[in-house]
Image 1 (cartoon, helix red, strand yellow):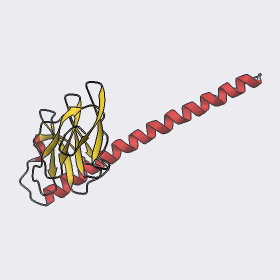
Image 2 (cartoon, helix red, strand yellow; image 1 turned 90 degrees about the horizontal axis):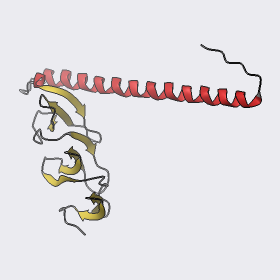
Image 3 (cartoon, one colour; image 1 turned 30 degrees about the vertical axis):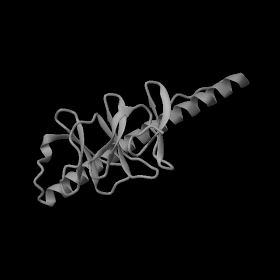
Length: 165
């Protein structure tokens, strides 16, 4: 490791700040490596459990598998066309493979899967019904029966039926 010495008090504070920043970068890098390792472990665990359960889904047709945050039994799976869909642990396909990403279960009044397509967000029920099509930028979770959304630069609230309120 490089040992830095100084002769002025200002230089000492600059060196300390640089060391602190370097430590933070190393720490953030280690965190990302940990997240990647955990994702790979979850994928391997799913594939192993799924194969041992003798389900009929042929997992080699998929590029990536990730556990949906906030759910114990739902998985987002990317197909060879790089589109995401949702399956449950039994192998039942919950949504079509048409989304660019699936982020997780939204917090709030309803348990909804947040989906992303063509740069927009929407919501799908846990049984796969698309109740809010991906047409909003930056939607919030539903609280008090409403979610704040942005569409074409305008912010407003919608209800669970996708009606503007």
